[in-house]
Length: 434
Image (cartoon, rainbow, N blue to C red; front, top):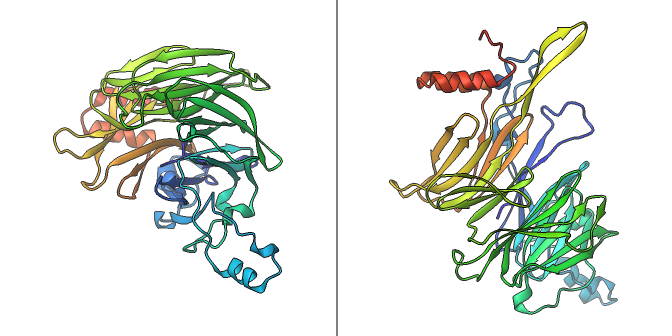
């Protein structure tokens, strides 16, 4: 599993974040009790040659071999209490015997708050939130202690003793620090981290069907929570639906949902957050939902294995100067959506990136025969869009956007002149005469 959002951990205190972005991927499996951290910073940063048009071009980036696995931690490792004993035998066991494994990781979620990275780890009956766990990873096999606990950790105040039908199933963490958990019984629980403990601030029943995915959508004026349902765990394509809960103003959150919007009753194969809405994949296309209604449908046939919205960036250029007043023009270059599906001809999984603004397929690649697409996330680093795909073969496929000049060059080489003109015209850094 990949965390619900690709995380770019930028130094927000610095005025220039061109090359100081740290990009980490947190991976886990439902058959393991460990969370692994993989560094993909170099792959997601534009190289010096891609910034040759800048007068203050940065120094050459190091080779991407500097990326890789950084370590892991066990979020639910059981701790011995033998150190409090006066017996020498107990202290020796506590120091040298490996603790039993913890609960298996069911879901992950991550977000950036101020200068810190928050990661929520969910088990079927447990929830722990870590602050900056990448600073205290372990590279030992097996771990003797929970290395991530050296940092700030938030845990449940009481144990989660429920029936099997009410086990935790999915989690998401918002940019303002709230943690939402969905259960097999269709109930939703919202926690607020305070003084090392996760305090339950809201609980309500969503539907009688299992919640398979939960997503926060936070804006300056409103907090909403998307819930995706499934009628049974054994049949993922039968029954289900999407609903959204309005929770009010972020500064004065309601203790109960103010409104519930039933958006769709059809099953959800894959979904990702898209701006303030939800992007949902179905066999007949890609659907976009707002908090209260369905917005758009892109008719893309085929079974989608994974999707994500790739964040777009805005380019600002000086258009004119009138009486000492500088007039700037700002434009959004592209709007990308990544879709991973099974190619009907070769039978292999394919990854396509669609450019919605220019109405074209921006990228297409076939994965290796032994690799299946599992999850995908999109990120923005140094004003450059990137997408990361996790495969069943244990590989992370990283795709990074090219600069406009390289895009135009590729399009003209393929005789796609109208698309090249449209793309260059959308970039304010290009003069109209060019």
